[in-house]
Image (cartoon, rainbow, N blue to C red; front, top):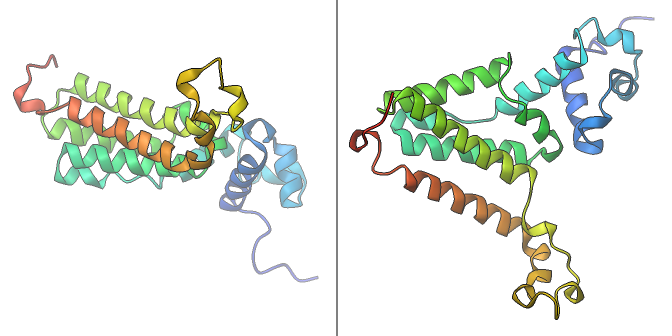
Length: 210
């Protein structure tokens, strides 16, 4: 029987299958055995392309972070933060089950390191001291991870009886779930804009500790 022209396995195919599995069943469901079953191969075959499960997870994390845009720092720290945060949030919102993986941080992940380097460099070039630049990056990460992992509006029950009598200020809360996507999107944007405004007028007018 001739060999297939397209290899059955590749590092990218393993990574993409892992992300599909995480999207469908959650991060705890990913195992090398389950991943091999999804791909229709033996688990041992995976190790020709990836060293460990952590290697697979790093590849998934790098794929998501590769979608994040840090180019806005070329036109200033404000544009940089807004573009970075919005694209970061969009990448994670598309794959909410993978957010806990991204929340574990940079580690040795190339795309993460490239993103962190671009953000920190952009802030320092704009005049922010290195310490404050690190704190600003952390604040944006907390906002993005929190918004992507804990949606607000969809957490409310859509049964009005839950709120009547006992919670007089929440009598309209049952309506939130139906409009959850807009509320969560606008709430994230409100938080982001508030964060950036809180950094005004910028580094040149502040007495910062390096």
